[in-house]
Image 1 (tube, rainbow over the protein chains, first blue to last red):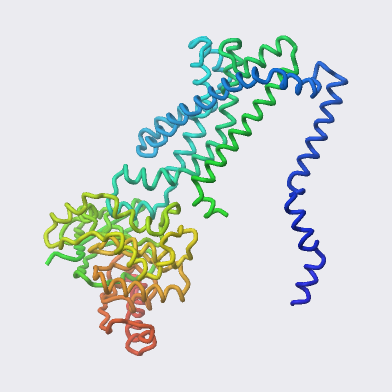
Image 2: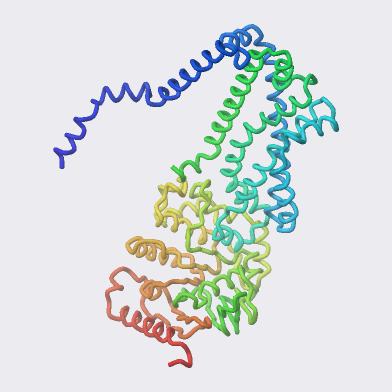
Length: 273
Length: 271
């Protein structure tokens, strides 16, 4: 037993070697780095051969470097629209989820409408909303809120009703009020579901804001407006610089929500690990 | 005498036509430890849910301390220990056991309105801590349920129910998911806590040994339709330690319950 154990250890790298390898985490960052390098190379080749298809990467970097305040200002507008729209969608969806979990009548009334709303291509509603609400912030917030609405509603409603029957029975025998049950039992039970929804909805909120900006170009700014103006003037480098920043925004939002989730749901990680 | 738990002519049928309980009458004096035993479908869990006010009977009366189960629950006279620990995973042990106490704060006033219920001070946090310590959970007070073993989780559920100082404690096969070793240790701790707080206990179980060891009275039930077939008083001295389990008089009671259960299997009229 002891000999087989020591032999299996011998065949592996020594302790110090393994320590260095682990600290560098080569196996973690190497594969994506290789893929990104290959993609960048393919991009450059395409950009040189067919300049109308992709801009050279150095052009994208150059416009980002020289016009950074311009991009940041427009990114700020888009970020505000997406976060504010998400907040509106969250408040409405969460409130409705609570109502549907408390009342079967409201659940039966709301759910079919919510499903229809979900399958409706919201991109198609955007121009209509611009006609209705003009070129201000309103249509952008509405679109973003609508896109975020459904995942939050469904997940929160599911989470609120995920409390095991026997837990409910324990608190029913002490005649806990509906409000007490909601605050102390149902809402905390729903939190993992809510965070799962937020991880879906944060990237969606950026899509919502950009789509709305594309439909109402030239009004209040934002990266969608920048893209639509630049593409009409064949400034591919500006288009891709904006897209690059949008992707960064998405990653940043996802990072923030993951950090908050880790803090709030420490108990939940404990149960699933 | 209207204290304790009383059922009179209780009938309960479910939508699919199953007669869960048919003309069941049972009277449990206060402070007694009563086990309900019987094969699956004999209505023992249904009986417990009726007393807990979680379901309503079709006919007959159920009373707890002379009032309906609903009123008893509103006054927090009833503590429930379900089959699973049913702990809230985001609360540590202490918060789990104190949460029911913090809910329905008007219960104390309602308690005072029910005749004969002594005005008892609600357990304060130090009392809860000593109760947890007696259940062997002193080290676990600030741990989350996921960090506890199954046996420890079930002990937390029992302390949560005892912490309400209920007049009636309802336990639905609380140890059925535990291994035999843990189960016997928990029986001993349950008796220890019960000895101190002296509440009426209705204990549903599948285990003959468990029923005989814990109870003053074993109620044997039979299915199709759910009914009481025998009531056996267990006249054994307390405390009932481990050594009692090997004695002849303990086995004699086990045999009596086993025979009654065998009779319960026979379909009436078919024999």
